[in-house]
Image (cartoon, rainbow, N blue to C red; front, top):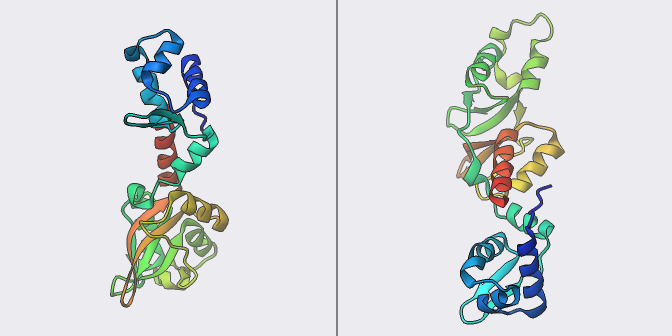
Length: 211
């Protein structure tokens, strides 16, 4: 879990504001025997991190939130549209062999299957392709629609969904990626992809912003 570490001066500022807020920056500086200019970076960090809030002509006050609560607030403000990547889409008529080649060339663990109207009809994972490869079947003669996961059993998300909710779906379903979709009159179109890698990038970005 990401923990926001404060230095000693910042901890003192938080305590002063907690006990005396709302309090102006000048009064905080007086209590610490420092100048207002010296404290400005610390106050900016505490305000941006969410420990303190500030109002013009009123001063600083304590938000009452712990590091864990601030982390939760941050997680609840990361949306799929900020981190989704380009989906790899294949036609439902192609062979399992061609799907394996596509997955290898695109370096992805999941591909999305669409019909002739570009509507989502299935999802194909590495596990599906591995299962199909076991045995003596001729993979170039088997269409992907035989082995794919079909609608309505596909777990999906939209660009307005929270990344934390998508992460929960990936864990719950034990899958590597979800299609990001938008509803159209005749079904759903694939507009993006969210994978475990996208989730990791989002959370690393959040951690870096917290330092």
